[in-house]
Length: 392
Ligand code: RFL
Ligand code: PHB
Image 1 (cartoon, rainbow, N blue to C red):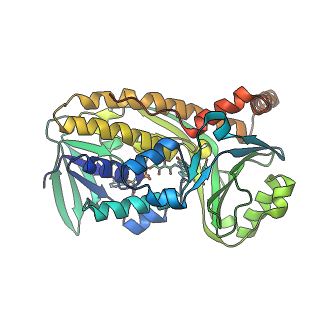
Image 2 (cartoon, helix red, strand yellow):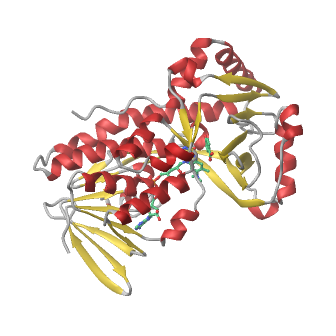
Image 3 (cartoon, rainbow, N blue to C red):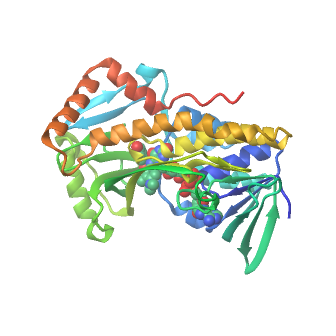
């Protein structure tokens, strides 16, 4: 088998990149380890930046998002029981869209299928060969048979635990990492959201986030120590703890119900440099992870896809040096999003063992920023998303 680009991973990055490349006339094959139902079962991101929305529309996958997504012109920050409003629209002229990653993935999957895209699900033991030569290939096992695809380029879109990053020889990559001493316990329920807008709250008992998927489906998160087990959190315990961290009026009107999903995600900041080796580039979570506080993970994946799409299309048209520009173009925006996600996480979460002086300074920083229009604008600019890199 032969193709121009092999995309490894059919999460949001792999699906969106393959769709855009195919529309630009590039021949693409996608290899995904899991079954489609498994990929759709992962409950993850909920907030899309303007640039991400625009990419989905360009890919021809924006119709249901525009119909069913919930545009949000602002969000709230709760500090010890008091709400502060960040007016995204007023401060930046931009809004964000609440539309679940599951829905976005479903839209892209169906579109790829309708347009005849090749996605091999259940591709086991993917191995990447000859990345530093002119003719790489990717082998995998499917239906008990080993198969091999020759290609010009490989796009590693296989997430943090994927095979692409690990296939780069030792000594080439530098990894930057910060692991946080807590995780997020998430709960999804068919209950109306407690507020029209998202609420990110700081509280002595720990951070909480009230988010949503629709007007009748809510997504809530609680900061929990890494030692917690999801089995120890009955729905009742979750709702009681959330009520305890919300401002009183919200606690009183919180509508509770049985959970549809409950899971704990550890928080991590991670960046690998460079994001390209020979004829392979790393895209999305394969190259970087942010703590979810700034809602940046999926959106960073989308801006990587934008650069990858433009440069791979150019490389496939004969400009073989185009990929050299991928890493520097992406990393500038990635580090700015890393900074914002780390900073918001630091301000809003409770860090055990923090000296009192440091706690008081952090409280003063948050209080200052929320009371200053310049401070709120800085938060808003980062939240709605910094401009995409210029690829021309
Ligand atoms: P994914 O989604 O991990 O997809 C990678 C795909 O690759 C497959 N794969 C392989 N395939 C073949 N061979 C192998 N060896 C393979 N190894 C892996 C996997 O099965 C999978 O299908 O990475 P991608 O596409 O880069 O997308 C990244 C996003 O999923 C991620 O950044 C976001 O979910 C992060 N995130 C959020 N991002 C936002 O922009 N806004 C948010 O509001 C937001 N909230 C969140 C989040 C992530 C969370 N968790 C659980 C980590 C909230 C949470 C709780
Ligand atoms: C979500 O709805 O899952 C969500 C929203 C905003 C975040 C993180 C997660 O910052």
